[in-house]
Length: 407
Ligand SMILES: Cc1cc2nc3c(=O)[nH]c(=O)nc-3n(C[C@H](O)[C@H](O)[C@H](O)COP(=O)(O)OP(=O)(O)OC[C@H]3O[C@@H](n4cnc5c(N)ncnc54)[C@H](O)[C@@H]3O)c2cc1C
Image (cartoon, rainbow, N blue to C red; front, side, top):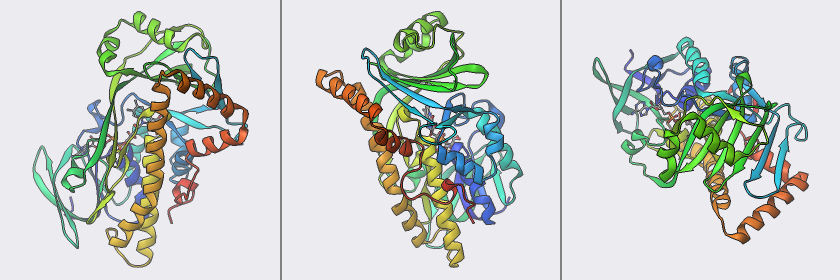
C-alpha cells in the first residue's frame, strides 16, 4: 500500500464505491477504506433493499459505462400510482407522458454492489483497504492524515482530499468536527419481497396509510419489493409476525389492486431518521451521500441525491485540475458546497413535508390532500414538474448526471 494518495474515500458503500469509480478516469490516486468485507454477507450498504434509480442516476452510470451491467439486473418503472388509504382519489405519473422510456429502474442493492465492487477491483489507480476503518483524522493546510485500523495493523495515510462517505452515522463527519441536525421519525421501514396475484407490469405503487407510506416496486422474476413504514412501537410486533399474518396485514394496508399477496421473503427493518450536516466541508475534506444527508425513503431519493453529490464533486475536481489546483483546495471545496446546498435542502424539505402531510389525520388536511392529488392528476404541467424533480433532472446538473463523461 502507498502512504500518499490524492484522495482517500471513507466508506465503500453505495456512494463511496460509486465515487471511486466516477473519479477513476481523472487519473488521480484514490484509496477506498471500507469497514465491512465484501463477501461478509453483512455489508450494510449492499443489502437486500431495493433501490429505485432515477433518470439522472441512469445517465450517470451510462456515462461511467456501467449501465449495461446494471440494467441487465434491473426492472423498469413505466408508471407510478399514488393513493391514500381510505380515500378514493389517486394520482399517477406515466413514463410515456413524460417522454421517457422509464421513470426509473429498480435494482436490489446487493446486485448493484456486485457490479460496482467488481468494477472497483479492476479499476486503475484505485486501491481498496477492506476490512479496515478510519479511526482518526488530522487536518492541515497541505494534507489530511487519516489513521486506519485493520486486523493486521494501524497505519496512516496522507491525502490532498478526504471524502466522507461513511453513511448517516458518519464517525468521520464527527472527526472533522461537523455536527448534524437529526430528528427521528419514530418509524421503521420494513423491507422484503412478495408474490402478487396479478403482475405489476412494471408499475410502482405508493400508498399512504395511517402508519406511514407503503411502496410496492416491480423487481426481477415478476415479484414485488416492498418498503412499508410502520411506527417504532409496532415494528417489533410486525417483524415477529408469521408469514401468513404479515401478508394479511400488508394486504389490508394495500388493498387488492394487485390481487392476493403470497410467498413473502425475509424481512428486515431500518430505523428512520432525518439528518442534515450543518456544513459540507472542512479543511481538505468533504461530505457526500448519507454522511451529508439522511432522508426518509418515502420518495426513493437518498441514493440518487448522493450520486449527484458525487457527480458535482467530480466536476469540481476535474475543473480545478485544469487550472493546476489540487483536489483539496479551498476554491474547490467552496464551489462544491455552494453547488450542492440547494439540491440537498430541497430534497430534505420535500421528503420531510411529504411524510408530515400524509401522516396527518386532521380532516381538513386530508381533504386538502385529496384536492391536491386530484389537481396533481388533472394538470399535466404539475405532474411534469414533479416528475422532473423526482427523476433528478431539475437544477444545474453536473456533467455525469447529464450523461456526459467527467472530462
Ligand atoms: C428502506 C430504505 C429504502 C431506500 N430506498 C431508496 C431508493 O429507492 N432510492 C434511493 O435513491 N435511495 C433509497 N434509500 C437511501 C439509500 O439507501 C441511501 O441513501 C444510500 O444507501 C446511502 O449510501 P452511503 O454509501 O452514503 O451510506 P451507507 O449505505 O450507510 O454506506 C456507508 C458505508 O461506510 C462504511 N463505514 C462506516 N463507517 C466507516 C469507517 N469509520 N471506516 C470505514 N468504513 C466505514 C459502512 O460499512 C458502509 O459500507 C433507501 C433507504 C432505506 C433505509
